[in-house]
Image (cartoon, rainbow, N blue to C red):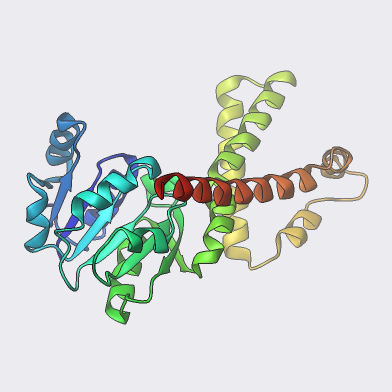
Length: 275
């Protein structure tokens, strides 16, 4: 399998790193095109042994998968530049947030098999929570290929496209919510007199441990919380303050707001691009 990346940002590198590490393909089976920064390609060549895509016409030769790893604002230009070079049977993968399958299809001439994916920034360490959706031209073989690629950077789930805005609000933006919690815990540690580096290590390990408990115990979060919340104890005192400040409701509203904004941004982009 030969893979061509259009774009060479952090998500492209995360995928390249995972794909090579999991031995899905070798570095010399990956080509990358990045129009704005030639030095970036050199960095990736030196680090991963990938090849530079010198011309879009090369997409017609020996490319099984084309991955659009560009920002949403650049997707229209990218699609228009490659539409003449896509060959029958090639799989097109987009990781541009908020860009619908129908919009991508509208910019291409053929019935191209397209995968739309929503990874998150934890892809950089192989721990992404990724959701993917397919258009009607995607075959079973293409689906297996896409699942194999994204499983190289973490957990992958197949969803209907109309669920991708919800995925964006939950796991796409989700790492930022966890960093926000970590930020608050570190600030609290400072205010109660803990040394900064010790506090940071304790916060990180606490988050890791809680995540592992959720993953391996099989228990619902509510049950795990109740198990460590003794009546009249320290945890109960802390939880009561969270409840007084409606923290759970705030997080629910947070995810809903991010989900709504994902849909708004996508709709706005497509309206502007259609003019």
